[in-house]
Image (cartoon, rainbow, N blue to C red; front, side, top):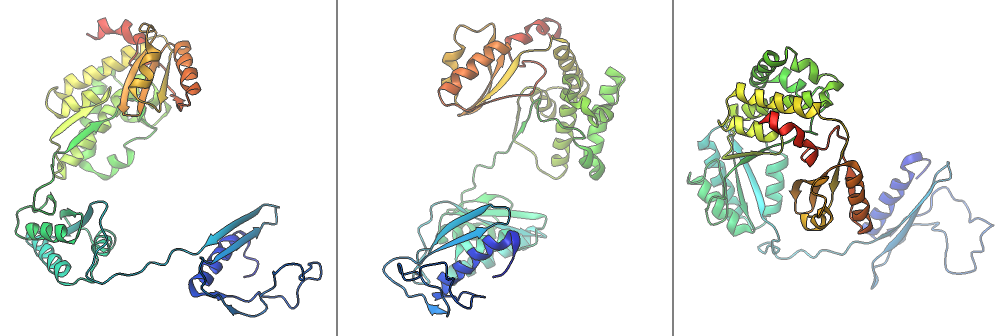
Length: 390
């Protein structure tokens, strides 16, 4: 192929994949005669001085590709011909293993229903149209308009039924399944806790969306009245990682994000949160007014930041049942700070105790990762702030 430098290896792969695809052994280029330093009589290896047919045998074709880098780095790979896929009759469908989504959008609800009717007719009347191809085209090549819907089904019949239900206007703007039932459409927002902050967070959103900016400014003004400081300026520097700034900063961004989604018509049925995210959830749900919520967040961050630094937090790739026995008898030093999922928990507490638990988990083959924090949040080390916080 020539001196293609870094692309030599992948160039060789492409060449041999195409050779196997077409059943052709391509001639070796730029070779007038075999090297005299190789005993060609020993064995059955020979140069391809002319292009030859690559016959089909009772085994897949195989080829080796080597790329010899000028730095001395050599890479080698063996390729094997892919199994030949036999196309069945056009009116048969492979057995589905997972639901397939058809994503629709239009400028109006009437146009959306018309599109669903047209797709249902085509999918039902033209066996050569494969559902997976239709799903790919709708998802990747169509213009996205304001009115949207999705139909989900495991096979052609379910998808046609769902499209027909959408065309009748029964489920416009919803997700439907093959028999016309609406998928449980309950939407939840989860607000994150400390650790998600970053320098300049929300800056581009603030500049791009007036709704976001207005909501952020409301929180920032309440923050200024309590602290006499600029929240926006604090978020644009490394001080964002300090507990006293990170918590109100996250609260402001999360509330502003909620108001932005809300302005687009995306309204959750339920909200929940982790750590300081609980306060954001309480505010947007109407449990706490803005001034009260900001006052609570500022006090929480100030009191936590005032505690002696130290302690540690550890992310553990295991379930609660694995970690709980290691916490027994250490209730005053360390605790289970968060259960993020069936195989993801966080341990928090005195640094030495957390280190002991980390060592014990590693011996069991469990992956752990220390978190970069100033304090051991959600642990017994937070108790000295509780009275004043209450």
